[in-house]
Length: 411
Image: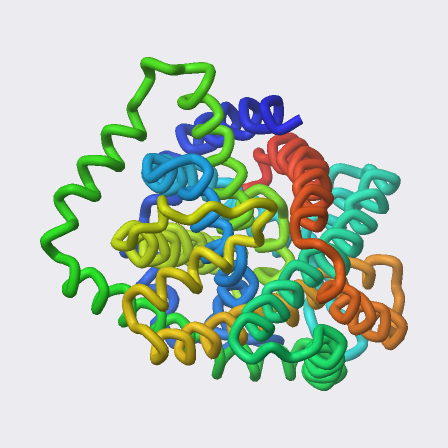
């Protein structure tokens, strides 16, 4: 499935990149927009970016990247970065479409995303229903379970607390945050995300400076393994496929979720498209590379692990660099990253089901809380397999729709 998806995604991304005159690379324009003061209804542009980053920066861009390097080698980080830049064009297009077809609910909150432009733009109501169901199962189910599973693993590793107790605490915390809806979620994200982002980057810079003598060797091995085409079938192609999957998981480009959070403001489609594309670049160029620096400056190759979440590698790396102090710092960072991803993931489901004119979302909140609890019990390996399949299906539906509606996007 992922071989086919990867080929389709890369081909369409290149076509849209050329059509839009490489619009996803206009990073200076994106930075000017995010710092420009604007009066908007609904959620502010900054809040929209923070909610998006809260969803992107988490297990996918930390544990997932560490996992990719562990299984695919250091060369994967170069391909993850390159692929993320190419496929980020889909973030621009999907957010633009999300803003064209968004709706405003009784609470004066804008709701948009693939569920809306599939139904109203593509005129395929049944496909819209399928995508909405996939979003709820994937994000409110599997993806949130992976976050709570990660919290459980790192908590259990440090404090040896019973799984059930950890699950209850995470579930109650989640319910308290999501109960008030998107405004509360945006408020929490505005506080949590910048703190997490700055802290993680500063730690990576400290590690980089402290291991400056290793950098030349690390760059050499990344380049050597990234372009090792001698063993095409056994290593090169699997590495590229792994890099594509991890790029998608880390940045969520092409899945359509950026269009959901990017539709929460009243700003024009182009502005919001630039802002959400900037979120992809922050994730791929800063967070993913920071994760690779933290891991590649250790002796992670000595670890013999099986059916791992990925967080085990990050724990090892922080212990390697910071000792016991690293344990505390990492625990706080991962806890906050996972919580922000949980609340953003929940909102993706809530916003999508509102296309069915559902006003009361209490049931979804309770189900989500229960799933977060169940996530601490299920094996993370199983969760990743199911999520891989669901993400693949969402991706196929969304990139098909975006490409069919590409003429509606103004570059």
